[in-house]
Amino acid sequence: MSEELCHSTIADLSRLLDRGGVSAVELMRAVIARTKEVDGRVGAFNSFDEADALAQAAASDERRSRSRTAGSGAPGRPLEGIPIGLKDVIAVAGQPLTASSRMLEHFVSPYDATVTRKLRDAGAICWGRLNLDEFAMGSSTENSAFRTTSNPWDLERVPGGSSGGSAAAVAAGEAIAALGSDTGGSIRQPAALCNVVGMKPTYGRVSRYGLIAFASSLDQIGPFARSVEDAACLLSAISGHDRRDSTSVDLGVPDYGAGMAALAQSGRKWRLGIPKEYFGAGLDPEVGAAVQAAIDEYRRLGCEIREVSLPHTKYAVGAYYIIATAECSSNLARYDGVRYGHRSRDATDAIDIYFKTRAEGFGPEVKRRIILGTYVLSSGYYDAFYLRAQKVRTLIRRDFLEAYKDVDAIVTPTSPTPAFRKGEKAANPLAMYLNDIYTIGVNLAGLPGISIPCGFTRGGLPIGLQVIGQPFRETELLAVAAAYEKVTDWRMRRPPL
Amino acid sequence: MAKPEDLRLDHVASLARIALTPDEKVRFATQLGDVLAYVAQLNEVDVSGVEPTAHAFPVVNVWAQDIAEPGLSVEDALRNAPEKRDNMFVVPKVVE
Image (tube, rainbow over all chains, first blue to last red; front, side, top):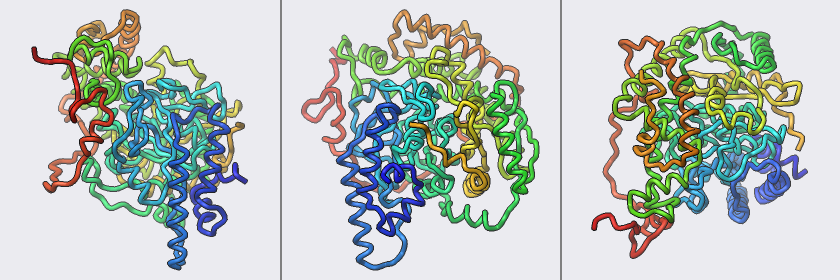
């Protein structure tokens, strides 16, 4: 019973909580027990605060009982009492906020991120600090300074990254859903590798206030869940304009779940674009076959399948690693050992503090990216690298907008390969970067994208299908994803833990 | 475009205020050389007349009302300080 709860969807648990079949405290206890049982093997969490989570759950039960006494008879709010895991780059007041870096190992957040506050306002329980690649830089979670998270489907393999802890926790039943952040695929790729749903909203849809910055023009917070419906529910809760993030967009937030359901009812036949550039060399044959089967499924559902072209796809990784590292070198300049975070004890003077603090506090991948970013912005190289990359970004964005003249959404593999073995790409940063080849264009163009389970390799490793939508039209994107999910049951499989 | 061999690691690390070990210098030079060689393919693209994109959706002139509201208390602001004294951050002497 207890383990069953931990693998349930938000939608099912919400109904169960509503009719008194379980209390928020009982649910939280079950999730804590499950986490203690499996996290020694999975390593999804940097830390969790059991007492705090149970206090939040008790407060939720209290709210529910008050509203019952008031006799409104209305169903409870969908996230009331649901434990949601948070990537350890999203601020939670009074809790550690480490970015899986020695630099912030002992940092305690003085405030809540906007998404954290919104989850609290929705009655959700903010649960635990989930592991990631240091400062969200990586595709395997191996760059964490504290632990390597294992893929629940094969403990010898990586869960993907950078939000590997979030994906693994949801897959392993250690959280009912989770939030991550996605700069070049950091939600969608680990979701694909762990057989869960992961969504990156349109840039500007969700406030970044209280998210530790990596590359500010690309970063976006989004949900991990066990179904498209659950992802929609979380997205509704965290979206919206925030005066504390001037890049958040002042647009109304639809009820994504209701919108999705209405579109499903309408029986709309989608026009789906298949970009030929996403099916070339480097795509694992088993992944390619599973994605092709998913496209065939869409065809059976009556969707119109059209080939489209995104001709600048091959330049996306190059443009990304200039733009993202440039922005990271600027954002991470704040870690200077003066006001917070690590400070070297060996520094001889004020300037030496910077050099030694940053040498000791940052791991190798973060140093590499800061150095690359500093280089491409440095005098004499700015135009050749940074400005050119920004122009290529324009072309990549145009490719997508051109394609959307003919199609409603674009369907691709999420990741070129299933989960790889730990250590396999650790010594070769470029090989690791190329793993993001299908997800990066979406960030450069600012589009919404989702990864949903679409099959398994013969060896039992999950495969993800990416659906890419149009700016600020997440409802349609979710509806397209849900149409496939409804006729398949990949998401129901559980890892052999 | 610049060539990978133009990456003067000592100079750039100094701009980035990071002290690198001799071992890191050797490894980073190779690894970043690979990345820069890969990135050089952007030279193939004809970008003449193309405007650069800094943000996917330009958001301009975001004005906020100038309203005072409570911020972090001094205690909260200093809670994560590596060293503090008398409500201040302590740093090594900067001016003789």
